[in-house]
Image: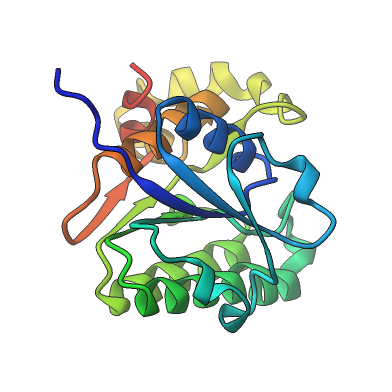
Length: 220
């Protein structure tokens, strides 16, 4: 296998649930990483990445620091989303995506990576709707982009859905529920990190969507 082409990656949300693990994985594979964080969060980043301190909701505050990166990974979002956070979804999830797309376009980013959410879904409609709007904004930007659509990511502090595994097992074997069970299936933290690294190292030409089955396959 030929050596993986080294990327220069700009990451927003680098101190979050997936961000720090993704940055560590990218650095271990020889990629250069710049991570955007708010003031006071610098110490939460893995060693080895370049720290950019700015407001992720304000493209003007950080756009000049994106170059010379060729890949942009947008991970900013409301933590522990639930139906009571409708206003936050609009302000943080949509606001950060809009700023990131603007900064990416201004800097001629070759590949934009965004973590969205599986849809349609029976619950969390406000959250799903905002993420869908972000997807459409990315598509309209004409950036080459990879969109990952997990439903629920298992990991530290997120273990209770393991109780649902038997129900998923059954649903995936019943024809009438199989498609929904797979599309809204659970993925692990490690599967998401593998899928994100794979997206960075194998950039899309155009607009690519990775649903739960493709995310799971990335770790196999």
